[in-house]
Length: 101
View (cartoon, helix red, strand yellow):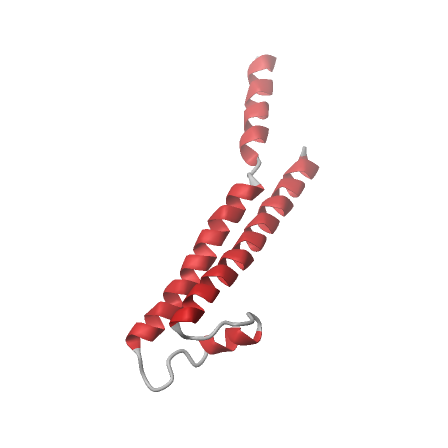
C-alpha cells in the first residue's frame, strides 16, 4: 500500500508543474492574434474615427495605431506582452508548487 501512495504522490507532483515556455508561447499567440484581430475588425468595420479607445495603446506601444500597419505592430507587441505574462504566470505557479512540496 505504501508504494501505491508514493507513486500517486509522485504523479501528482509531476503533473502539477507547468512548462513556463509553453505557457509563454500560448500567451504570445493569444495576445498577438487578439490585438491583430481587434485592430483589423475596427478597420473593416470603419466609421468616422475607428477605434478611438484602442488608439490609446499607442501611448504604451510605440508605433501602434489603428491602421493596417498598426495591425502588424500590434501583433508583435501583443505577442511580446502575452509571452512575458504567460511566462511569469508559469514561473510563479511553479514556484508556489515547489514551495508546497
